[in-house]
Image 1 (cartoon, rainbow, N blue to C red):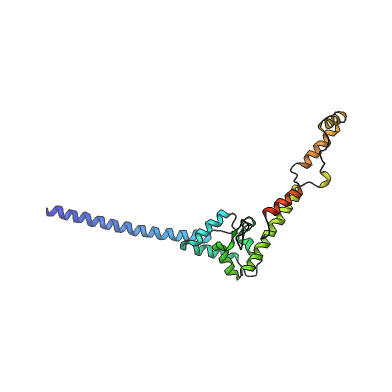
Image 2 (image 1 turned 45 degrees about the vertical axis):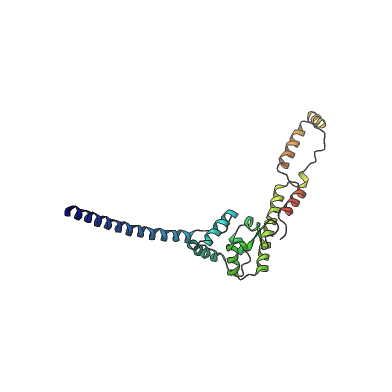
Length: 210
């Protein structure tokens, strides 16, 4: 009986020592994981934010004490007082176009997001000044849309109104085969044409002033 008891004590001691070794090893692994995670978070590039999904992901990181400092550090690198284009360094024009300082007009309120509130604090901007910055960025987006429209639309000299009846076109082609070449040229020049008036109307309806 005594031998059995001593044997159990020895096994218990051995198990305890093994457990302590495993606990120490687990502790070292956890420390390494935490250091590696901080390094990854500290070197990750978050800006400029490309989509609302990316913005929401960063918002979660700003609410998490474990990742907030890394995001704020990277954000401060983008911010310089007096920089009138700082919003463009934080977020893309597509993201900025979806926010304003009031939350009106189907846009998100800028001050509902930690990213923008923290940026305004670092830059020392009040609500009115931040609004001006947003309007400038949104004006850039509208200007870019207009340039894209001009590139997509052919010049007025190459647009030909299709007012000739089908039968007349058929007889014209039969009488003069070179007409086919002319029609081909017109087709090539008018592919992808956009009604300028309709485009401008749609653009202003989609991107109204704040």
